[in-house]
Image (cartoon, rainbow, N blue to C red; front, side, top):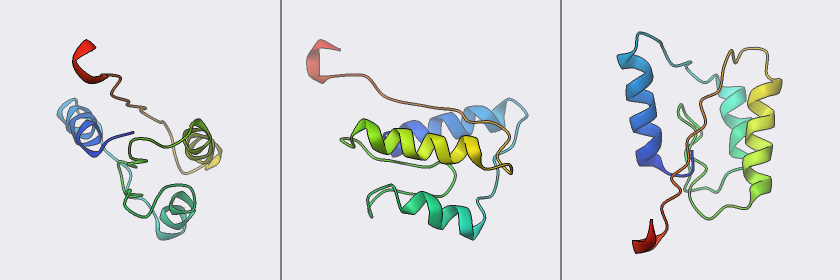
Amino acid sequence: TGAGGSGVLLSDAIVDNGMSLMEIPPDLDEAFRRFIPPFGAAGNPVDITGGEPPSTYEATIRLGLEDPRIHSLVLGEDHRRGDDG
């Protein structure tokens, strides 16, 4: 996600609907951390934080798609912009 709050909401919705979240192994956590800023979170959910360039999203999504331990990705982004929504 691009924001921690939306990640928590998505995680809650996943669990509320009978699914579970993968516990991120240390090596995968480290791999995600190479792409996100230090104030982001590489746990599950991965919080890329706002303001990152598209290349950061692409790199983290690609990592998730290429790791055979990950069975699915749920992408979340808050597209609100100021008062004009």
